[in-house]
Image 1 (cartoon, rainbow, N blue to C red):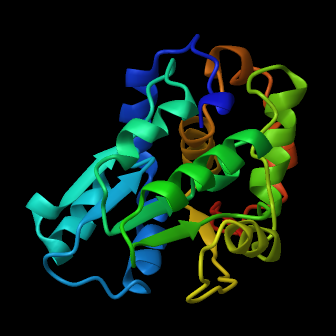
Image 2 (cartoon, rainbow, N blue to C red):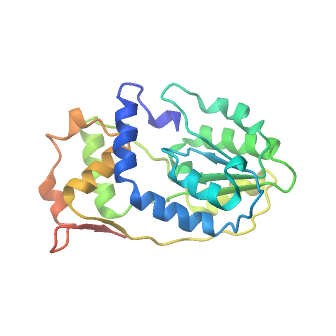
Length: 226
């Protein structure tokens, strides 16, 4: 995740905006967690927990004393994951974070995980391998005006499976999930995207091509991506 951050923005403000606009992330995260069939007493480390809503949802299933959520600050290096894995949790959640790591960071993360998880511990990765057209179009605009760094670093499900197998993980389940992203308006879509992808609004808001995004909106003004 460190590779996606610039260290030059007001991250507290971004977190507040993200928390106000991340209903879609929470919904998708809850669907992901439900697939794990967690039970009370299981230890869970939520890596890249963001503003903590999914961490709290998970805690309701396993007990608040059994969940620990962490998220890197702008200056934290991915190599510090070795400190976090010393917690020796039985399950590690990775919800919509893996695609933010570059190739080296992905390898570093998985190497730490296989060495530090308890025997029988699980690593659960929920990652995108592409974005719906509205999101892809907006990110393209942001990169073009240097309002964000080129990211994420997509890899497909088969490639992730292979990376894990090479390190000794046994794949318990591997699925492709299909989601619909829906936002009430172009403005709410912009707010969510800027907060989620750390887009520098000072460089971007006056330059965004809203007309280009309008082609993705429905008759009621909502923006839908699949």
